Amino acid sequence: MDTNTCSITWIIAGLGLIALVGVFCRMKQGFGPNNLKAVGIVIVATFAALLATKDAGALTAGVGLLGSVAGYLFGSPKEKDDKSGGATKTPQ
Image (tube, rainbow, N blue to C red; front, side):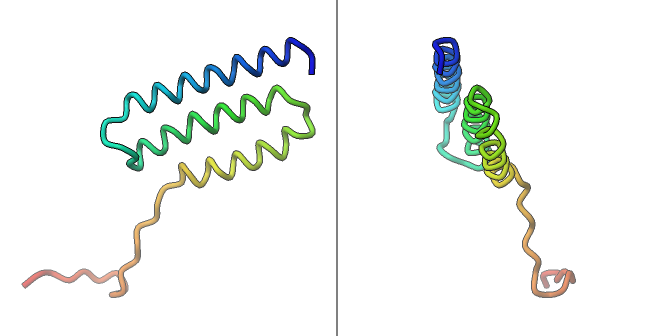
């Protein structure tokens, strides 16, 4: 790894760390679902940018793994199906 690539890697890692500290400073009520997504966005984006500085062979597998983690983090939760088959009961 040459000096230019090494310095770019450290710059990206530093910016990712600064962004992560900024997200943690903005959190008021701990790790809720939205705060977890914000932390996940910063971490996945930082690692994807770090992988982009490496060779192309490692990039494909790494981005695929990060994509699956990002899909898990940012996927919309499905609502639970009720046992009544969709019929709603009204309180009496």
